Length: 358
Image 1 (cartoon, rainbow, N blue to C red):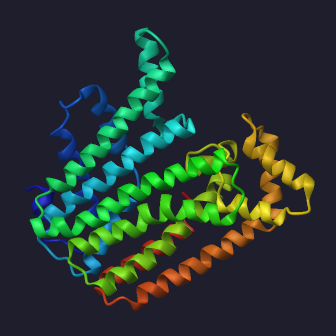
Image 2: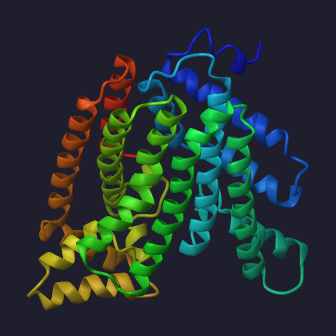
């Protein structure tokens, strides 16, 4: 018996949703393996290689929180859209950040470039790799829409979901562009950095997936408002934790080079706080700017900046803000009139998001 048809018998177990989602992803991609095969093979590899499935998980528990109950086949299939949207974001983000790897394998643009070199094709391997990856990301975005529209949702349910889905797609792109602008403009303000975090991560990773799930279940406005408030705060806290890990994370645990965000010149809230606290300290400001604006950052510079972030109290300030956001997010959740099992799971997910080490 297919796992997708057995959801009725076991709707409440957390692990079951991941199993159901992975099978739905596999089925969706398998049905399209002959569509643009030169591009879709890379997408299948990236999507099926792993990932935490954070966005579909929050959407699922948003649906459960608002009273969603079996049968859930179409709901699971609809949440495939979130992983495909994430796939689009990862592929394009890796091109923009020049990231060489993703989920333990070459990033999509690197894989296409390597194929170009192996086959001794004409023109630039790098340009081909970047161009093909952009098209692959576009295909993932198109398929994300397909997954939602063809999931089998009743027309009224799909209509409710379309608003948060449209907002999520737009906010994801806006957040990514603001991230690029922050680097180009040499942004140093905390306000600008937090706005990027709110759009690029909080809305797209937690707030809108919850909103989407709640809309699928027909939640009333009060429930949606509480879930979105929770999602905003937990999403920003999630990004702040990610910022700390991008600077201080253990490469053997995170799978990323030590100090990757520093080498990429990321204008994060962590760095914005450091700039603010470095006012009147010319040497500290020069070090921070040299790290963010140099085309090549040495291991020594990374170590010096890491030490400076601690010395200035920027790390402690971010940790304090994470705790405040966790508290305010959980307070918003506490106000919501929602399913008890979903409430417990959302509390667990919040704590896991802000305290994670990977």
